[in-house]
Image (cartoon, rainbow, N blue to C red; front, top):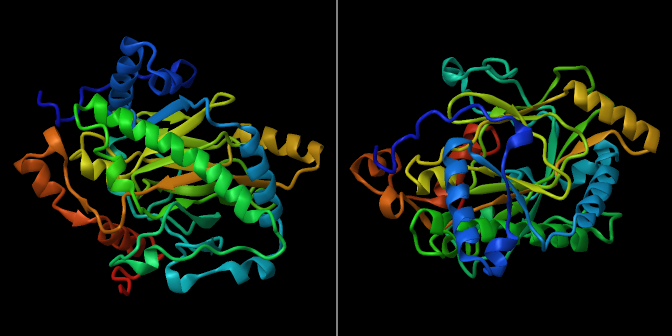
Length: 363
C-alpha cells in the first residue's frame, strides 16, 4: 500500500479507550522518543478516525466556562435582539447565522458505506441551530477575498465580548498550531508545512447554539450529518452531549471529551492538502438520552437551556493554494484535488450549504 492510499479498516475503538495526546511532550521536548511517537500517533488517528483528543497545558478550562456562560446569556436573548447581529450580505461569515438558515450538503449517497446510518433525513432539512462567527487572527494586508476577511461584529450589551472571545479563541488557535506542526512531522513534511499556510487565515470562533427549551425531544436533530469545510476544527468540552462522529471504516462513535481535554476534527482543507489520506470527518448532533440528563442539571443549576459549543474553525489563508503536499502529491491525487485557492474552495462550500452564492465579490 502506498502512503497516500486508504488505510486498512481500523478496529472498532470505544471512546473510553481512545488515546489522549498530551501536547506537553512536544512543547517541552524533554523526551525525544515520546514526542516523536505522539506525532506518529496523531497522523495515524487522523487517517483512521478523523479526530483527536488532546490535552494542552496552556489551556485554562475556566476560560471555556467563562466563554460558555457568556454565550448562553447571549443566545438566551430574543430573536429580535439577536437579528441586529446578522450579516447576510457577508454570507454570515461574521455575526450571527439564525436558526434554520444553514442546510447541510446532501450526503445520502454515502450512507450505504456506513455501519450505522445517521439520523439526518435524506435530503437534509434546515439545521435547528444558530451560530455566531467571530474573526480571529491577523487580517491579510490585501486579499482577493475581502468578504471572507470582514471585521468582527460586537453585540450590544456585552462589554466583555471581545476580551472573552479573543481569550478563548487564542487558546484554541495555539492548540491548532501545535497539532499542525505535529501532523507535519508525523508525515515527514517540514514542520511549518501547514502553519505557514495559516498566516492571515480567516479563522473563525464559531459557537453554535441550540435552544433546548424548544428542541428537547429525544432524537431531535440539532446539526445534520456533515463535514467541516475548513482545515481543523477544535472544541472545548460541551455541557450537553449529543455529538457523534464517523470513522473512516464507517463506524459511528458517540464522542465523550474527558475533563480538561480538547476535541479536534479534520476538515475539507486538510483532506485537500493530504490528497485524501485524511478525510474530512463526518458528524452530526442530536438530542440524546445523555442530553436530557444535562438539561435537568442545567434546570437545577438555574442556567439557560442552550447547548453551546466552544468551537473554533481553523482555516488556511484565503489566498493560499490548496493542493496535495509532499508525499501526498501524485497524478491521481492532483487530479482529484487540483490546485485551488482556499478562498474559492470556501466560496463553493458556502454556496452548497445555502450561506452564499459561490462567487463572492472580491477586491
